[in-house]
Image 1 (tube, rainbow, N blue to C red):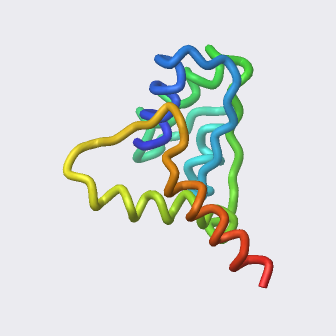
Image 2 (cartoon, rainbow, N blue to C red; image 1 turned 120 degrees about the vertical axis):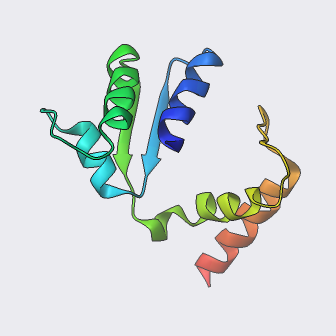
Length: 107
């Protein structure tokens, strides 16, 4: 559901180029598959396919969870907010978190 919401949000903001990455391989494979199967999450698959076909410069790819550490760190952080948050520019703590993660990975 988060992927469909993210695609919708990016469209609302007027962006024309976007790369979406997800670590749920079964979802990515279902969305990118040529045929429609009877997925339990069929409406999600169809919604995401609609966005990908309507915006030809959108792409979706699978990434392993280990490669998606920063996204998961922010997903955990989001639970500390009482209401949904969105930023059009990067908050300062994102830079600090990213830099600390890069330092950790290098050593």
